[in-house]
Length: 166
Image 1 (cartoon, rainbow, N blue to C red):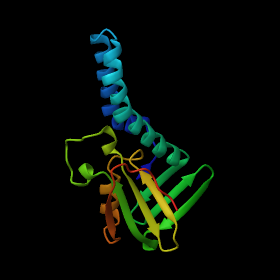
Image 2 (cartoon, one colour):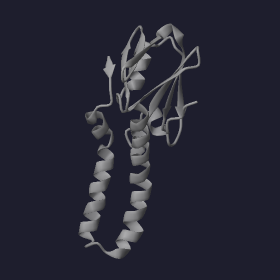
Image 3 (cartoon, helix red, strand yellow):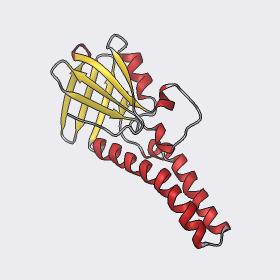
Image 4 (cartoon, rainbow, N blue to C red):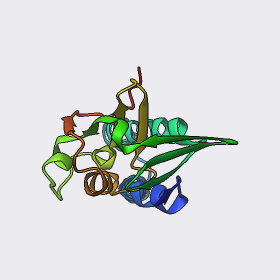
């Protein structure tokens, strides 16, 4: 399966974000842009809901912007511009999935828009790390589990899953 950062995946992840911005704009319109509404409602909503999601989306996009992947049952081929690196599944030491608690338990109800974001870190026996975020596929966890079920998989709960590299 070939994976790349597609605009459709990004828009589907940003759907909650877009809805929040529309609600904020509607509140501004309905309140006739009252200064008190702006200070007490709009700014806190923007700080708590919009900024964190925009930052995590940028982090995921920036980390994976030059990469494409070909994932199959034999391993992973990572493409970056003109170069490609092949990782054999026998060299996978462990897979770590970094996700929010609500995603971890499979909850449909989310508290924050950034709770849909998560990433997988595949660690090889040589110590190399392959990081694939949900911008490549919203079901990367299921894909890796189905292809590499013999590799130990750990789900790491984190409130705000920014990509961490060595």
